[in-house]
Amino acid sequence: MDYTSILNIVALVFLIWFIYSRFASLKGLNNLSPAQFQEELKGKLNYILIDVREPGEVKQGYIPGAINIPLSKMKQRVGEIPKNKHVYLYCRSGMRSKQAARILKKNGFHKLSHLQGGIMSWKGKLTN
Image 1 (cartoon, helix red, strand yellow):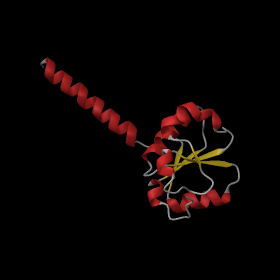
Image 2 (cartoon, rainbow, N blue to C red):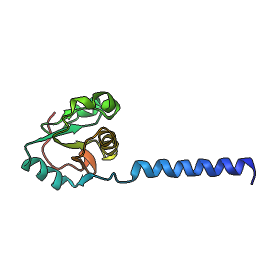
Image 3 (cartoon, one colour):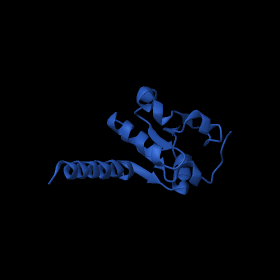
Image 4 (spheres, helix red, strand yellow):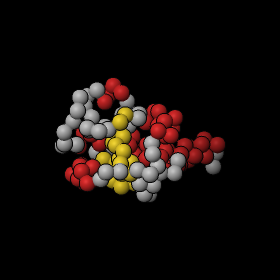
């Protein structure tokens, strides 16, 4: 094998790993449909709802009661989130909320759920 072939194989392995790490499910993260998400929020008292979209996106509407902690600031602001509460996360499509859950999991959070399909799949009320 020549040097170029080895580099191509390494690049391909890295690409596969990167894609897998972004799309693979996170152990301990509850993936909730919009109906399940809405039902969970009705039935619980000890939770925090976090919108991980950027502030400009939040202006388009957010789920009532949500606080905005953008994914880009999650590592710096993780201390604002109480560990004794169930954390519900959502974003636009569900990808960033999974990434936020990974950050929270690494920081000792265990009660994590996210909205599959993000706010694009949400049928409930939104606040502007």
